[in-house]
Amino acid sequence: MESLGDKLRSVRESKGYTFDYIGRETNIAIRYLEALETENFSVFPGEPYLLGFLRNYGEYLGLDVNELLSLYRALKIREQPVPVEALLKSPSKAPKVLLTIFLILVGIGVVGGGVYFFMNISWKTNAAVTEEHPAVVYTMEGNSLERRFYKGDSILISMRGNQYKIDLVNLGEAVTISAPMGSVILDLGQEINIDINSDGLDDIRISAQDFARDDPSVGVLLRFDINSDIGPVNESIDNETILPAADVGGAQNDAVNNLSNARIIYRSDTPYPFIIQASFQGYCMFRWEIYRELRWQDRKEQYFVRTNELEIQAQNGVRIWVSNAMAVKLQVIVGVETIPLEIGGAGEVVVADIRWVQGDDKKYYLARFGID
Image (cartoon, rainbow, N blue to C red; front, side, top):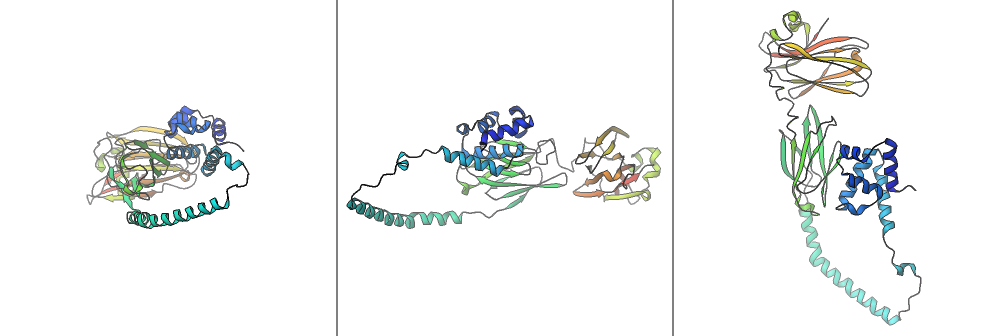
């Protein structure tokens, strides 16, 4: 049977990964990666660290984590020394009288242990039960949250119209939390950044500020912060001012400023910055421009394939060009709502503007305009 270290090393080498590369991807120190492959477990500060790193490393390599944990436990059992007495098969030569005395002493010990149990252990157990905390799900409002969590508690974090859940799964020598991108282990006073939505950016900063090792009854003081360079969804983009309808698109587009020619997406007393999310279902050439400083600019063009995703942030308007309207699924995030956006049929080449326009009723309308 292939050993734990051999399995990790063979899969890593088959993928062409180096320790440096995996260390950057998983935030696991290189010395711990090397220790897992050489089965040198003495370098870890404690078994919770070892198991956490083994789980994260295995998940990153695409291995069966339960199988890796079984290999580790089997290895630990084989390493346990076997007493010499257990290998010898010699009959007992103790006289019956000594055996009788031994049994009497055992009986006294059992009685004494029972008395001790009922006088000491039982009340401690009851006290521990009374200190158990029911699992609580907290919702993060704003850009930060700090409070004491207990095992089983969770926090819901909303970003870009999506909601993500983080769970506190264990409190021992370290704090173990489960996030959408995998397990994270924190020591006392440690701070770590995670990419909660797998978009390549570190979105959330988590720190463990106070807990007692191996005493889950006191919980842990956790702090969650949305990194400042991400910002809330409805925050102003580039501090740009929303333009009135007459200025959006220029005089040459006055005809399409008429709301009768538009498909209304959202209505509001105040215009918001908005986001267009694109999820590609097939091969598609996609082009987009942002309306900024009284003109269309920042034109970009890219060839996308199935499973690719794109997010476009805008203040006043976005113009898009799609080579196959059914090859992309679009949605608009505006205010606190996420709204599907239909633009055309299969094989259809579409050019459209999505932008704010002020109506005769002085309300603002985020609308989709077709461009010929």
